[in-house]
Image 1: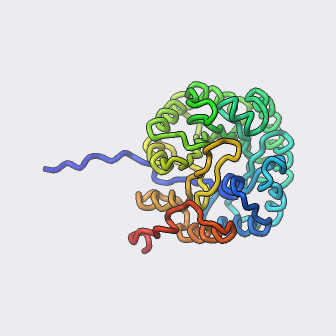
Image 2 (image 1 turned 30 degrees about the vertical axis):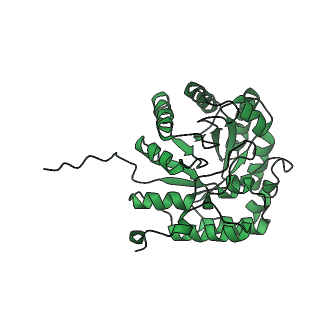
Image 3 (image 1 turned 30 degrees about the horizontal axis):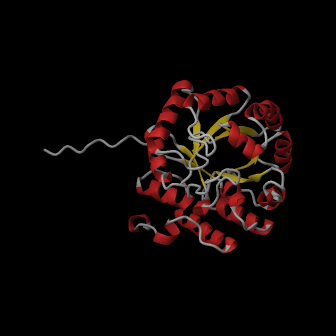
Length: 310
């Protein structure tokens, strides 16, 4: 008698936050017009997504691709049930995000000193000192205040980042008012067993705290890392339409996880996403036309497997 090995128990449904309009476009040499950005956000809003990261409230001279984020918020067509969020590095950015009408504001902090200085021109303690004030601004406006911890799986400047440091910073962020935490693999240094080690350590220390992962595919391990995370219970992920983007303040950081590639894999595994794969693929094709270059995503090149077309 042949015994079929038991497969790992995976989440039945996955929640995806689309970060292409922010983390994707911020790393593009081509700066899209406000009209194109609004068209992209509106198209993504029609795919079934419940969370879209619209832009960032940062200094325009540092990230000119995000200079018109307030205008995008003003012109886009909001759909009920979708959280339209923005990134803010400091109190000024948080105030601008609230004024623009962001439903949620994410502060970003690095797990290493070197990357934090490169990213926001502050050391980690300086960033942390601003978090409490930012949380007060955002929460008093009735919005969600979340935190993203960058280079949580390795720093391009310092190398390995101790898991204990990642967890200690998570504890500080939670104490300072962050409602949700996201761990970022900013330069694609994560690998499956490391992902599982970090997630399991996080769950042991914070057993009731939800966790989101922001994984990259800079070294081709993105979907493998997703599967590893699914095996240890993670059901919330960030991804970028077309696979565009990365961090402009860290070497070797291109390679965001591609939304349509991720959704294709999940649907093949019979994991629900609530997303229209074909609508996402049309968004990726539209983005190629806007940027005037081929995007990294593979599903629009290889096509959809036949059993997903019915």
